[in-house]
Length: 107
Image (cartoon, rainbow, N blue to C red; front, side, top):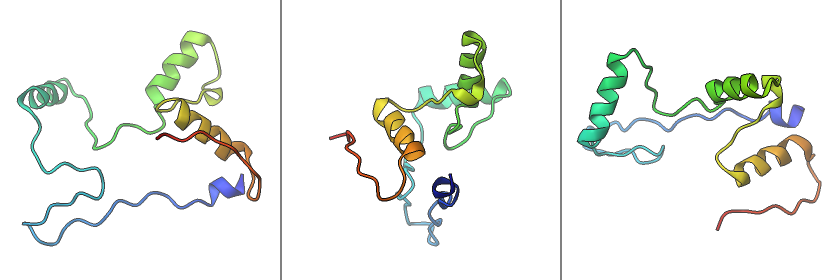
């Protein structure tokens, strides 16, 4: 749909210019990871794992696994972070501008 295709992509906030500044606008934490998390990260790197600031938003590995398990076309699988996110994705796909919608929202 053009309404979805024309939405701008997410652009992360700018990095602070001053080394003493702490950037908190993109869900970044100014503290180092705990020792247990640091050990898990080191193990993942040692095993050749890829580490990113955020996980794959398309959940490609999960989608592929579900498609294989259910013998279903991956294009027909949508995953999300809970029912509210999935309902929101559904509404964005089927509702056109100007339509009336009643939708749940987290409190």
